[in-house]
Length: 405
Length: 129
Image (cartoon, rainbow over all chains, first blue to last red):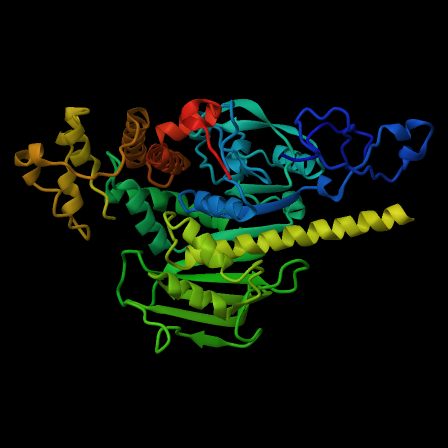
């Protein structure tokens, strides 16, 4: 797990101490370089306890916002897979924990920061979407602590019972992902995010997906599903939707334009809206950056089945931000379609040719693996990996600079 | 939308027989014309070997049903109130939990579960070279 997962003392600026002898994990742990503004390592005879803190001490924080039932957990699994390893709930802890932990990543569900449990929300007549049901102060304090390399005791919101369970210990990971309804709602938390993503599902698609999910459920009917969506809509539009203007990447899922009158939500049109001008993020493009492209790969070199695939790429403005939009409409049904498309996209941040295809194939049983949702989630995952590596390299360079001084 | 309604699959598994009485014909209204949600169920019950979607664990399933009833009652009184929205929000939350529970059941393999906790036993030894 994280190298700095030991302790921090309050006097340290933002680092952790580990003494090399106490290596209970049994394998070689990287030495941690100690770096504070006060430089107490040079004082006295303390140099034997090789206290060092590395650039990895500061966690990279990613925020992911979406309504429940909108594929966040699929996104999480794809993301953690890009980094390697499978994300699992913490072993030996509360079985209803919402947290996922892998070697490099920890995913925290922001529902754990509900201030009101289900009964409390019913009494006060607020939905979970309402900011009054969430404790943003605690969210900010804990995310900040994790970012600085301090372990925290995070509450658990049990979705089955609707109660707040006793807290669980979360150690600072290399990458922390906070997923939920309000990652970008509070401005302080927003500042802590190194990258943020918003999953914007259109109403028609949301309805189709919820039908798919709930129709097998006893007690549900079309009317109840519709009523549920509509009752939540005012709060959703007021509190959750505005977060998309702050997101660095928005994945917008819309009904397809290739099949007139389609309302099944099987074929989707997905748009990846990427903010321009960000420090560690270079948008994916098709053929020529900044120009407007419309591309149908199916033709002589590639045969596609109905309804085919259509791509578009263009610069645009989104809530007064400069963005680039990459759009895919249609479905993949063969491997060679996927690899063909991948070979024509640029700036994917892959480490080898075919990495996107390989990741998509690895999880071909996940929903969205044959359309733009899976493709763009995978691409965003690779972009986040690239962002993480750039940040780490930058910090390592900064530490080296400071050490020289 | 190709999942079999729970009513058909669970009656084949012989769980709670009352489930079969729930009016699944509601599904055939409107745009969802599912051919199997019809009278045929009664006569073909013994022939039903449907490769069905995994059923939700009964406790969560009960909670979903209750919450829907409660929400409908609350909203019958006052459709615009916060209580109504909170009630439907609860339905949404429980449906999501039910869906996750279904996925977990679908994904779990008893051998894998055992080996995760006991990797040193004979059944779980792996050789990598």
